Length: 282
Image (tube, rainbow, N blue to C red; front, side, top):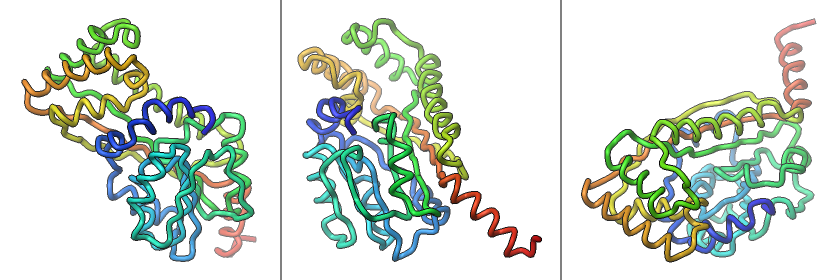
């Protein structure tokens, strides 16, 4: 993922263990829906883009079919291999999707909170070339929102106080949540409006994750805006956050998981025409 290589090196790969321990997974129902919507069986071939530490890769492996996972970060790829070492149907490759080459064609290509890092100029065209005609492009994002609890308001103030370059003004919970939702909406619209694929499913899965004084600073440290801050300033900020959360006990983080399933436009139209034929259309 050349566009996001520096981000992976700073916030994700360098702190791979922190990323793996702090970032939440995805709802169990999501995987049930993916398997059903994409018609995944034991002979299916799956390609995962940006596997990270293998959070989703492990769940895909349980489908029983072959899973080829690509991860640009060396440390993250190592963790992903460790996570999936009991699954003989999984292979984790270190590298970017942009540089990936294969003569294989996949039944589903999946990206979990990763697709936005891929080079804009090639990401849909390359997926198109690697997919079977009836294959699916599966895009998943975890979006982190803020609760209206006092602990969150205090952490917001700490963002501005300790990291003024990254957070030049103090934002309200409503402002932050609106920004998160707007970013998610832009990602959805990019997919929906793409002319190479047709969106067949868009689903939402709201969940809440609870963090304490040890785990919440770890979560914040994996976010790019925080991760890119100079280490001394970042450490002071995270220490202040730990004290805030310790005072309140825990902090609840609302997470909205979005699932988008697409098909090649040509494949989708072919399936529609065949459906009409099989149901007796003239």
